[in-house]
Image (tube, rainbow, N blue to C red; front, side):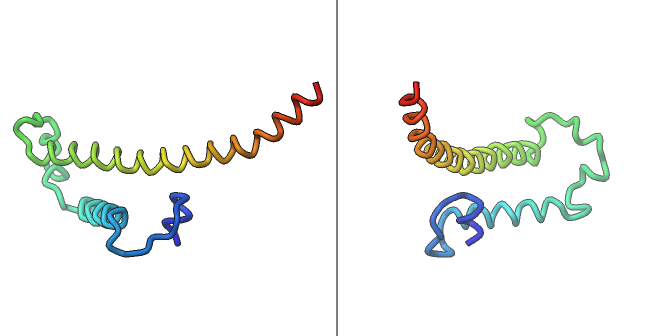
Length: 102
């Protein structure tokens, strides 16, 4: 139900849908990352200056950021595309009426 409202799509048939797995995995990763003290960089801020080449955690974080941004961006773009197409359908008759008045 929530999926349908948030992403303007039909209700999911199964809890094993790949979209559900993606959102669940994202939630788990974010929750673990938000635990206080989960990362040494919280206690040693100088670690932020370590180059990605030498810091596997930094490369992984960058990869997940890009991956999640692409996935959520695709969901957003699908919703936007559907809304724009509906608006075009709704506005099209109004455009025809305006042209007839001229």
